[in-house]
Structure formats: C-alpha cells, structure tokens
Length: 178
Image (cartoon, rainbow, N blue to C red; front, top):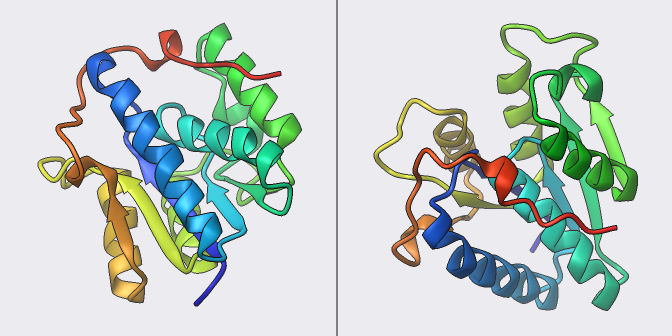
C-alpha cells in the first residue's frame, strides 16, 4: 500500500451540508493515517481543497508524522488574484503551514489546471474527492477520471451522504487556523 493521498473537489459546498462533510472528511483522513498514509496533496483551490488542507493541518497536531503538500498550477499571487481578501488570508495561512509546495507554471496558462490535476494524481496512491456525479465537465471530475485511469482507489465523500453543492460563496465558510 502507498502512503500518499490527493484531494480534489468542488469550489462550492452547500452551507447546510458543510458540517457533515467536514466531520466525514476528518474521519476519513484519520482512518487513512491509521492505515499508513502520511503525505497529503492538494491543489490550493478555494472550497474543498481548502477544507482538506485545513483538516490535514489540524490533524498534524495530533499526528506529527503527516505532511501537507501543495501542488500549485501557477504562482500564489496569480492563483489568488481574483479571490476575496478572506479567501487569500485562508490561502496564506495554509501556504505558510504547508510542508512543501511546487508551482507547475510560471504564469496562468490555458492548461495549468489540467497539469496540476495530473500531477496530483501522479503523486497519489489514493484520491479523496468531493465530486457531484452530475457535474461531469469540471476539473474535479477530470481529476477523478485521471485517478480511475491510473487505477488508484477513489473515495467520493459526496457518495457517503446527502452532501450538495450550491451557489454559496465559500469565502464566508473558511475556518482560518493560525
């Protein structure tokens, strides 16, 4: 069994679904840790990526042997250029606390997100996602297909409960840890 997990998921999560989703996310990560997973990779996007990064950072206090790695499509200032101040603050906290990061392109390119998604899968032995099966033309769905093609296990937290996506702005939902 490998030791690395990548995360992928939608940018928006229905506010009413968030508490249950976060509870399940923490449970799944803790179970993964007890099964030998120590490296956790995320793409640094708002929404599910941020929740996963925050969960790993929270759990790192209890499990100091785990590591959070960021795989960024482009430099942080470019990736977050259109984000709200609150979203950038959450990103900065995660970036500063991450164990490592890599930037795949020096600027935003047409395919930098796809490169990021492929790199996440290349590094992983398992994929934990939050993917609405109705949203087939998203980066999240693309990443899940890449993981399936690689033949690694994919655990979709959207399948485990009645979690929903909606139009809520995730900037209001960040739990910022310092």
